[in-house]
Image (cartoon, rainbow, N blue to C red; front, side, top):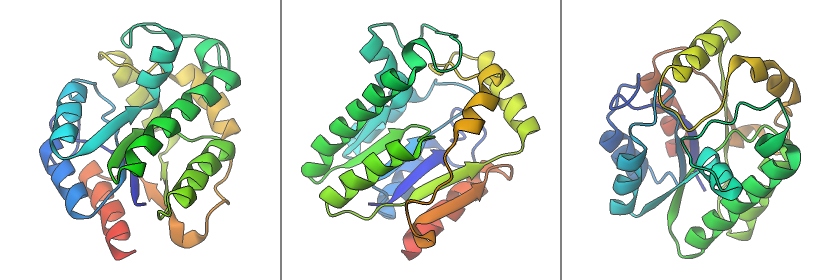
Length: 213
């Protein structure tokens, strides 16, 4: 299974490829799981879902899945304290479990999935890895890094736009401290990408890496 978990588009954010071009490139390079992470808006979400269906792909978002499980509108914000409410460890486990269950349904049928989640905890990455092993699929982890000042700017910009995400600077540091270093896969299956360069460049780097595997 080939994954790319951090892609921006020029259609709705600051990428160099349109959403159509991103999907076409991913399909050409046999990317099985892909995450569209436009940080300025979610204006492309419906378009991405429609395009994914047309290309035989499925979109699974952790933010959307989480709010559906909570029974609230996806556009309703829950700016709760870190690790509480729908962002508690227990609710997060349910969210990831639901996403992986949905992904399995499509992978069993030979389909491909676009999955959007942070996978901060090793426990959740291992669950995804076990699913890949069960499906006899390759498994890659893409770790995206960024300097804190840029993170702060991007989070502030996202709060000004319509977004399904509740991410904000106040919870960034607690979440960063909770991040488990990636040690569950060999180096050949762990790609670390600095996302400060132009997004199109980082996307091409990831796709090139997968294309060589």
